[in-house]
Each structure stands twice: as C-alpha cells, then as structure tokens.
Image (cartoon, rainbow, N blue to C red; front, side):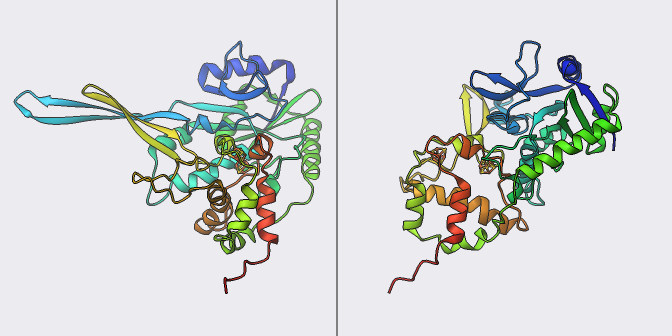
Length: 352
Ligand code: SF4
Ligand code: SF4
C-alpha cells in the first residue's frame, strides 16, 4: 500500500485543501478540551493530545433530524389528510482526520447493530458510507488506554482508511483501504524508506508501551453469574454520581431517543443520544423503573459491553478500550476494574 509524507509545517495548507473537497472534521482545542468539529482557518487543530471526545458525532450526531413531515388537507376532500414525509439522509463526503485507532474501531461496534439483515439504519449508514477516517497512531498511549485488551492497538489499522504516524519532522501516511489510497495519493509526496522505517519504530514503541494485554473474555460468563449480586454492584457503583459523562464520551455507545417537534401542521422527527446511566433511561410511563438504582445502571452498562453484546456478536466486545470513561469520570470509576473484579469475585452463594 501507498506511503506518503507531510511535513508538520504543511499540515494547515493540506487540511485547507482537503476542506475544499470534503467536510473535514478535525480535533480542535476548545479551552481545556479537544473536541471534533469542522476544519476552518481559525480552528486550533490539536493533533498532539488524545481528543477529549471521540469523532462519533461525524457519523452518528448527538442530535439529528431523521425526517420532516407535513399534514396536507386534500382540497377535493377536506376531511381527508395526507402526510408528506421527507427523509433526511446526509451523504456529504466527509473525512475525519486525527481520530485515534480506537475511535475508528468504535464504529465497527456500531455497524454490527445498525447494519444487519434485520435492521439497516439508513441515516447512520449514509453518513458512514460517505466518511473516510485518517487515524493517528497513538505514539504515547495513556495509562487509561486499554485498546489491546479488546483486540485493538495504538497503531491498529482496523476501521481506518489511512493511518498517520508522527515522526521527527512530519507525518507518514499509510493507506489501509483503496479509498484511503485515493485520498492521499494526489496531494502528498512519497515517503522515503527511512521515513516509513521511522514510522514503524514509532508504532512498535507504542505497542510495547501498552504492556501485556489482559484477556477480559471471561467477563462474559462472570457478569451473568453476578447479575443478581446486589452487594457486588452496589460496591462497584458506590462512587458513581450518575453524571452520564462515560456514556456521552464513549465511541461505542449507540442508544438514542426519538422525539417529534411539531409546529402547526408540520414537524421534524429528531434523534438524540440517550444514555443508560440516567435514571430516566428505563423509566416506564407507569412510573415503574426496572433499573431504579445506579448499581442497576452500571451493571447494565458494563454487562452490555462485556457480556450481552459479545453473546450476540460472535464474542466481539462493545468497548474499544479508549479509556475516555475512565479519564473523564469525575468519581474515578474505572470500567477495567469493574470487569476484573467481576472476573475475580467468587460466585455468589445461593440463599439457603
Ligand atoms: S462518568 Fe463516572 S460518575 Fe458519571 S455516570 Fe459514568 S461512572 Fe458514574
Ligand atoms: S466503555 Fe469506556 S473505554 Fe470502552 S469504548 Fe466506551 S468510553 Fe472507551
């Protein structure tokens, strides 16, 4: 596959050129946070640190109009109303530059749910098809990173179209897919053998820095074993303040809510992210809530990612190990510790 090179001081002009052809989404410094948004000349592009947020928004927006509708009276037959529905499918050609390999792998988790024989979520899939990912090798993984526990790695190409790796004087771009090759072929110069070798060394060092992976697959059975273990879940969820940060920052959470905003005879149907750490997530119209405590909700979040989802999807875990939920949790709840504690905990004894 093709390998190209871009000097650090040419990054802005390259992004500006890309933005002429594609909606170009980049990590931008906004105060203390690094958030993904469209590239523009005044954006403070930040590729040196891990973004606070994942680029999930680019394909699965936090809020989107699924369709608009209008009630039209039939002039011939005023008692009869016809509903006009217009789908909103957004196939704007898009490139996400500077997400991490874990972020790209996160979309693989969502694909298994929204692109199946039974369900094809066209709003999601239209954007997905139109979006290319140029992911950045995590040259210095953080202590919260655990992508290698779940089949990923700081230089894993899975889910990306191009992998870019920082070396001494610029980035080496390596095409992963044919579409990725097409994206970098024209505007970048060929990388030299020495530059490709430097990139390889950066990737190897990053992989070594991750340390040995832990295999969390035993959690699939163990989390079920502890399903009714109230004591275990109350201890694990004790610190949680139900803020929802973990779910909102997660690249693999895909739950949503639907609401209609109606104005007179027309309206818009909106999809917005929902989050299972909220007490309202499962509240029923009767007022009954099957997950009334934060212990129930944490059990669901961890159980879904490490047990129920893998059971439905050939053992694949619904977590890409990005560590954002660990880094940004105000109460320091660590999903790795919850999983390992579930694996290590003795089986609950049946009541006598
Ligand atoms: S970020 Fe932490 S405190 Fe907030 S809901 Fe998640 S686990 Fe609870
Ligand atoms: S559960 Fe946490 S570590 Fe796993 S993908 Fe979501 S935010 Fe990242």
